[in-house]
Length: 387
Image 1: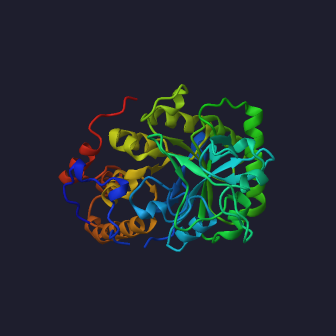
Image 2: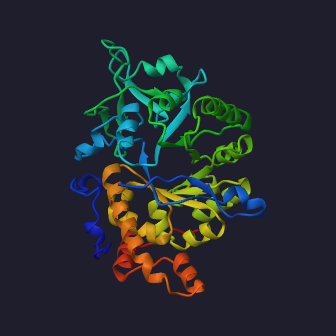
Image 3: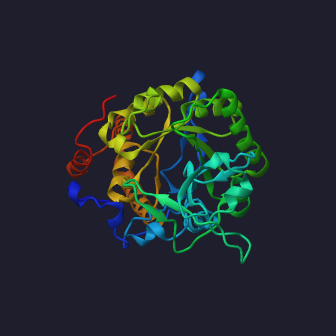
């Protein structure tokens, strides 16, 4: 697959990703690596490059002019099954625990709605009972009308949460029962960045989630991820069945908890707690490409998320760098793109048949960038993140 030089001004915003982007992917699962000693639990790896559906078949961007960003309600059974129609390996979604201990799938920490006087109010999802939460948005029972949902954009606008194909808020248990069992789940454990969680409370929330997983997961491929460092460390302590990944934006934003502020800090978290890998914001990888090698050297897997993952050239470059998979909104388009360059790579494998073993190993461990590839990388990330 040849890439042309791409100027940063030409890399499309999410609103402008062409709908004609072409689109089939092979099944991929976790497999144990060749780790030894205390890092054995960190030596999990994906057998092939993976594509995961972000919140199912993509997050909702109500302010977007791209109808695909408002096509299906995110984090819903409808969205999960829409993604599962394609040869995708995992769907990623957000899980919180209600006041009465029910794991529900909902991204925002606060639910935005109107009171009886028409005034906008926020309600913390974790402080609502399941019945209260389910009273918002579309209802399961025909004829019932739920309370309206709104969303606040990054620029402060408040928009009614309307999409072309709406669906009700769902529970984790419901997802296990109603989504094709061949599709893996990447369960992001969602916590409030501005709240301090005591270990006892964290442990309780994780156990509530694990009870549902234990009863309903069966043989479904599953992994956990979280931006909350203590939650990931504790999840590794309370269970050893499923891999746990640390989510980080790699320094794009600065937090009081230094463990969240760089890829190198993320590596430390993983090694300290026996985590299996890192899920990084894609821009952090481009701004600090050397971190990819350090992650690999420590026998950790690496996935990325972010809006740039909806651009096929960006995904291709990550494949060259050694990233093992991407979380995307435009599921169909990126699956087809990945299938294209995976097939192309297989065609080129024959060229290495007569190389010495040590030379083949060099090819496998070093990213192979063309000048055009490097041009795109440098223009996407002109200023390195400080680590």
